[in-house]
Length: 562
Image (cartoon, rainbow, N blue to C red; front, side, top):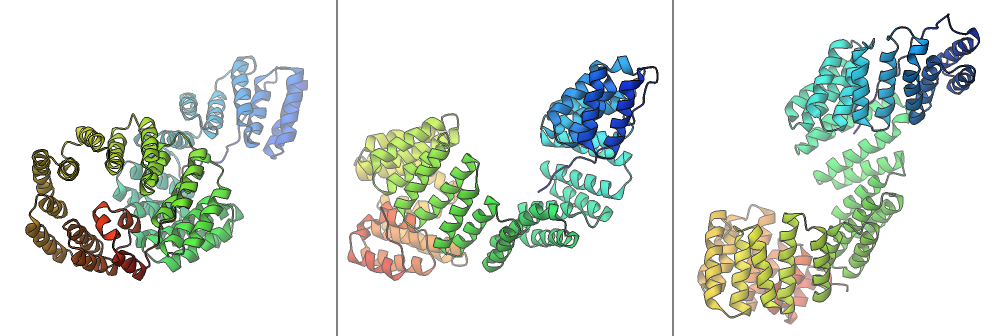
């Protein structure tokens, strides 16, 4: 997306003081003409020559103006400040100060010094800058960049009241739409984008922005229409300077098709993005995601590598490694997954998410000491984040449970419940530990009772069935789960998961034939969370039987690669 571009530079109206020495001011006059003719380097050299004859505010102003146009904003600021220092020695009135402050604000604005720029824009208004609409416009842009969207919108309203050109009004209303969207009022934002288009139908930004926020509201078809319109406008204009925007819009279009599961169309769009600009890392990352959705994993892996190669930001590069590692572990390629997680940590060692995932992976590989070590490293990095701390305590509890440290697992689950005292899953895990591992039925039943009350309030039928089974009421568990499966037949996702849950219940109850029957049903229904499947503790008894390998081969479930 594009936001709040600055307005074209307005020329200064500078006046000579005939009472000053003619020689340096004649050079200033010549510099002024060169600047107006956009011969900025020549004008700059003349100003430096004039300053060699006499330090004066006018030379500093013209030179600052040229340096701004040449993109040397820091040097421009220095010259504007010098102009203010020597201002009263050259000018007898304050009318030029408005322009100095405005352009000094513009220079700071370009450098991202938004607070300082706002202060200079305020001074420009105090000295009655001759085009106040542009001051409000630019000050509004600074407020926007600092997250002060209401203040930004107020300034855009003031700018609209001072500016009459249709193209400018189109951009200002588009900017107002951005402010309202950032304030959470999408419907008002959409009306401003419509208004923007009414002033200039060739302005592609409001289509782009409206499409973006439509996608945020999951209105993918409408977003797609807006992106297509923006693309058509850019292609019709055929301006090379807009190629970057065109590439981004094709990428956005690809993402909409992907969200709609129109993968062939998504691939066409992302290929156009890459053809328009072949050096944008994000494009290859999106193409990797599309290939992944199409289950073309080798191609996805190669596209991730292209994105990694082009990405220069280490933190973003680390996240691309993480994305690829998640694809790899879903394919049970633990070896490649670990390699990518290691690369991610080398790029961004302060991001605890990578240690977190490496802890999970070591757990899948049954290397519990390493899993706990990584977990502790993540806990240290997330120590100020209570939600993440709680989740990591849960993960460490599961590692300790699997490694035989049952008392340690109990302590971690209890610590987790201090963060989430209404977690029925937490009480279930404690009940399960006490029942199956520590053989303490009293504590098991106490925790199952608490879990039951909370699960009933949450209407979690599946969890209630697990609790019933562990409490010894098999008949109730199977009956209730069968009813739950029937009730979810119309929901493909939920249906396959409930079939998987029934598989687990029968396996836990020691009924292998029925467990394999429902395992077949769940896989036939599309259950494809293979990572969960092959690491499901409830299915350990099935994994020891020959039918396990037979049914996994039947449905082409990948074999873990350590």
